[in-house]
Amino acid sequence: MARAATTPKTEDIVEQLETLRADVAELTQIVSQVATAKAESAAASVKERVDEQVHSISDTASQFSALAEESVRRQPVAATAVAAGLGFLIGYLANRK
Image 1 (cartoon, rainbow, N blue to C red):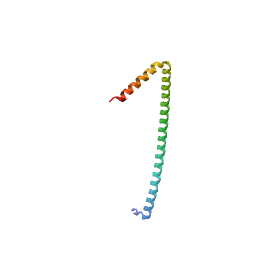
Image 2: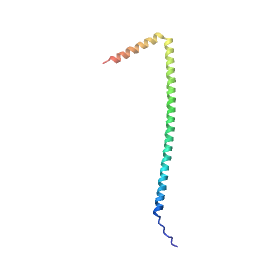
Image 3: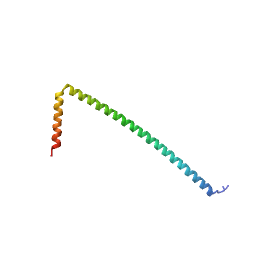
Image 4: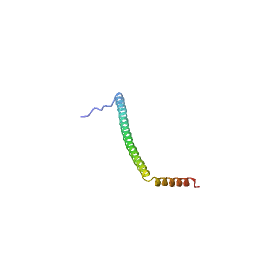
């Protein structure tokens, strides 16, 4: 039994191409939305980590400041001598040619 050969009509091909174009446009939009959502999620995650690091650094700086204040209060003469020594050293290094 021989099958009857059918050739697609031009209208059918045009219709299929239009459907394909619409599907590709829809897929492009979906991919764009997914990429935007992932980028926003990544940005929020990075912001959260940066905020945590800033808070941690701030806490550490506060602890060092409190420790320095306590050391100065316990040994004011030594602290003054260290500050003067550092001042002379920085002045020497700044004026050196």
